[in-house]
Image (cartoon, rainbow, N blue to C red; front, side, top):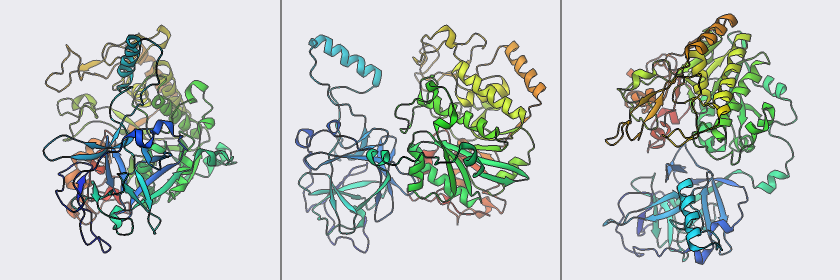
Length: 602
């Protein structure tokens, strides 16, 4: 049942799959585990969160526990950060940093499937003095607004940690200690519960290393030094300057600790591509120290929300370190993050340095990446987000369907751009920020609008006139009068159409002509120039998927004819794993893709 090695147990214990697959029907320890109830251990909401966050690594394979969707799998590169809450009973409850709790889930069926999953858990509310009818109404409203039942539903599972002589832990899943977790023999991405072992006798596939990435809150409070240290923003920026093509360039990025796993891959490719420094805008007050705890391989400095000098309504964010949902309301954390990002670029350019802004899911594959962008000799070079190729996931990647790709030919991507420190470029960046503030649209939609006169998937809102429901997504919005209506694309499902509006997406909302003519006139007066990066050299998510089998899904020793001797892979200088394509890499069971193993390329 468990992965076997030199120190493997001689007798394979009875076991069952926890993350999907067929149950192993063995003997020697029983085939059933009696679940432990929360009444016996205490419940997680009654236990204080210390603020510490951990990576959990399987000692034998080196795989990390990672929440992929709502499943928990083991991967070589990606990892989630977990909190561990210890009950008075000695049991632990485990949640990922976004607040989803781990649970062993029993599925009905002849095969007796079980899996380790993450769940949205809300504890039952305290006794309510209101009448039963009033209380039921409150619960019903909470369920509609959150999608989570307030008083019923699945509950987190308790775990018990037993320390091994090596310092690692055996993770037991029953109070009597008979059941414990290990990697499945046939598929190391899956976790198996085995019975009958002891902490002295288990092999390394059943031992888990806890690596602390974020210190407890009390410990952090005792460290008075800010993430940026005693240096001013200007001094930190100077320490990140690279000299490329005769120009001073700063590579800038931004993220929270919810993206630390991807950031570690980003750092590896920077080093492999001879980029030795970058400037990080942390979004949560935790990311900078977490990055240092993970031993970043290149030099970096940190900027914070305080450095951005924005109004309080744009800097106050609750739960800033959890991955934020995509959203364009002015109150959403995601919108505020994007607003900081553009301000970050503006402040750097004001210091007289060019800015290369790259999201952490942009993998830079060639030392020629920065010099070639510098040589394009325009105020702005921005990546394309046009949809091309075979990728078809219209839900996570709008217009990726072959019949809708034609509507994206001029789309740009704010996740990767190079901006010179020129008066014209600063004008452009300020225009984009004004567009975000005035119409409550994302940085990508705002940049698209300033460059081409239309958004991508946003409906610009008029905050001055108040908000009403748009009748489609339920989001608060009133279309701004200076914009025309978007194209409405039907969903592709059998029951999705314009009559019921299911799956319907707004697209390419254009400015009214007078507004666009004024913007074009200002561009000409400022002398603003720009280009789009060619997709065949600076790929996006759909390109990654289209070339997965022939190129990006291959290891270093495969596909020499496709890879060639050009700088980067197949001539690519970078690949941006946007449009939900991170899952393609996470599902690479053997970690075969060269993208997961940064090293210098021909």
